[in-house]
Length: 84
Image 1 (cartoon, rainbow, N blue to C red):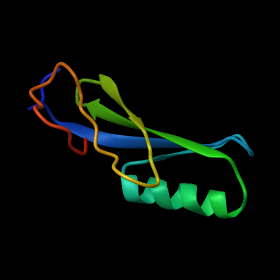
Image 2 (cartoon, one colour; image 1 turned 180 degrees about the vertical axis):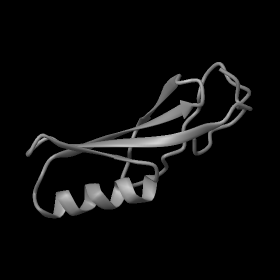
Image 3 (cartoon, rainbow, N blue to C red; image 1 turned 135 degrees about the vertical axis):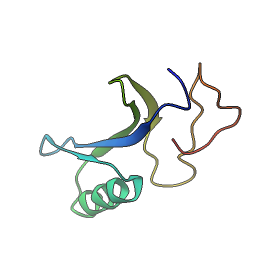
């Protein structure tokens, strides 16, 4: 895995109440979907992934609705936490 290779962030969110899931390419859109479900009293969770052009992916952690969503990806050239 090379930090220089083309990659994108993918966010997968899951509504544990209705068993519905959605995939987003934007953290903002994923958080919006999660907030809408929380307003409806649903239990939700989400994960961020970095997907590389060769098909490899790295789990970058849970989506947090409050605080920072920055993460550190091991075995890359990354030297400090950032948004994947």
